[in-house]
Amino acid sequence: MALIEITNLTKIYNTKTVPVYAVQNINMQISKNEFTAIVGPSGSGKTTLLNLIGGLDEFNEGKIVLDGIDISKLKENQLVSFRLKKIGFVFQAYNLIPVFTAKENVEFIMLLQGVSKAEREHRAVELLKDVGLEIKINTHPSQLSGGEQQRVAVARALASRPAFVLADEPTANLDSTSAESLLDLMEELNEKNAMTFIFSTHDPRVMKRARRIITLLDGKIDVNHMKS
Amino acid sequence: MLIALSWKNIWRNKKRSSIVIIALTFGLWGGLLSGAIMMGMGESVVNTAINRDLSHIQMHKPNYQSEKDVREFIANGPEIVIELKKIKNIKSVSGRTLIEGMAASPASTFGVKIIGVNPMDAETTTSISNQLIQGSYKELSKKNRIIIGEKLAKRLNLKLRSKVILSFEGIKESIVYNSCRVVGIFKTESTQFDEMNVFVNQKDLFRILDTEPIIHEIAIRLNSKKNIPEILNILKAKYKNLSIQSWEEIAPEIAFLSTSMENFTYLFVAIILFALIFGITNTMLMSIIDRIHEFGVLIAVGMKRIKIFTMVILETIFLSVTGGLMGMIIAFLTINYLSKVGIDLSIISASMESFGVGTMLYPMLPFSMYVALSIMIVLAANIAAIYPALKAIHIQPAEAIRTY
Image (cartoon, rainbow over all chains, first blue to last red; front, side, top):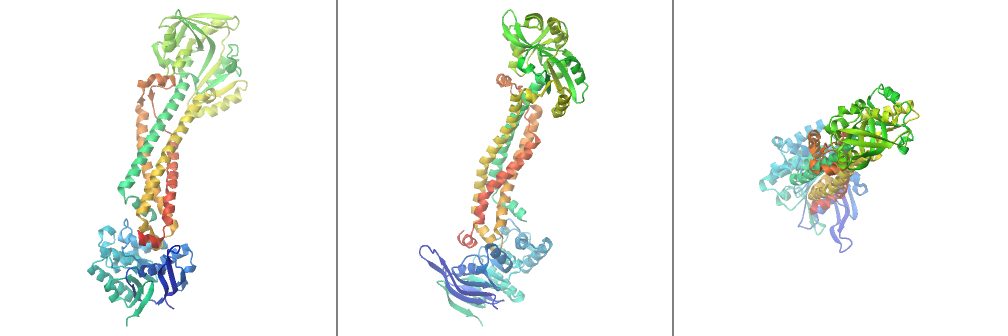
């Protein structure tokens, strides 16, 4: 069974005036352990599709089944809990909590899950070690570089032991060294920990690393290419 | 961690939070200090009235208060005074012979209340002996001596050693007269009292009225105001045929003034807090708008809206309580200092005296008010937080992340 099953997915904006099909009749499946990039020009619907898969936005037609659960049937609170347990998010602008240290940012997700303090602290330190930030666990985001902040964001995304990670243009704000380093990290996590990554991107470096590329054009899948 | 996050969040924009905290601090400080001055004034009116003439409890023959008739005296009054002195928690007792009469001097005549006292008992029950500005209280023990107020002395053009003629209705004859020499002039906090009351030795009155010792009013001073209910119960059970009243029943207007001052203080502080609610709401709203993107992210990663709501409420409470606490601490220190050194209001002594208040004012605020105020601040913070918190929980994560 696929980890993500999308059937006839359509999202329309401005339905009361001129309908804009942000995503139109999308059908796709993503299996566990995939390292997939959703690509396409601006306005092609990459972020919208990622938001729909992440349960952050409502769709008009179709069905999304994540890890065997039809998310359209979940109520608001159930959907929040589902996101907390099953999905890790990495955003373009890192979006760490500025008043928390790196460790506290990673711990926070586990706090929301109700994990005990001792376990939270242990796991947060382990995750930060995994992303190469063991010496900066008590550093605030403002004192970290963009690449370091994005590494903390990856550690945060993994803290909840999600089924998959959605990363919306994760390298867009990074210099090439940081971007390559982050991609190395994600690739390693994918290979060693069998973590599924789905990116939206127009960064050629990400496309180069991705093993599958889904190209969107005007909200529709133009190309769905699995590298050999 | 949610508490830590909320606390840290309010310091993200130090300038904005500091402005609200300073507004709260000074708003409450001003409100509490004004309240303490009002309550100090109320307390001063009560205490001066109790010290000057009311005392804590008074006993009369039931009809006396309405009739004011010299014949409406307490049966066995002198014996009752002796009995009362033996009751625990009664500090002192003064039996008074009261007669409505006229005081005449060569210059003028004025209606007065003649208060016949046992000078020794009166000295321990009221403060008149300490409020003489001329003369000696001890001389009241001698025959045909009188102590008058400064205002009456001016009205009748009397000085120390002047003679004054008292005329009043006797028990047996229609009108009796007595010539007294002024041995003391007192000045209390109330010019009205000073004008309308004179003190004589009650032995002189018994002699002129040609009567056995008669007492119309027994003034009782207790060790503490707290003992009033207990002693009232004892006396009411023991002297069922007498009217026994606390100072609050005798002078309800003074009791009302004292209670009103406390209520006004609550009202005053409530108005200040009400005004501050809008400031706090505005600040929190700005804070929410600044963080829409962040709230979107928090909801996206799995923070439930109820937790977002709680976080905003906590932030508002922390902000308000910090300002409130600082305001209360500064107010407490100021009031504590002023309650010891007092505020000298002699510059407006005339208006203070007509109000029955001394020129030295000692602000006071009961501890219960600080407790009540803490609750009011938390309540105000909750009210102020509701709108921003609702705004925060209605954020749509996808839109917030995409748009802001």
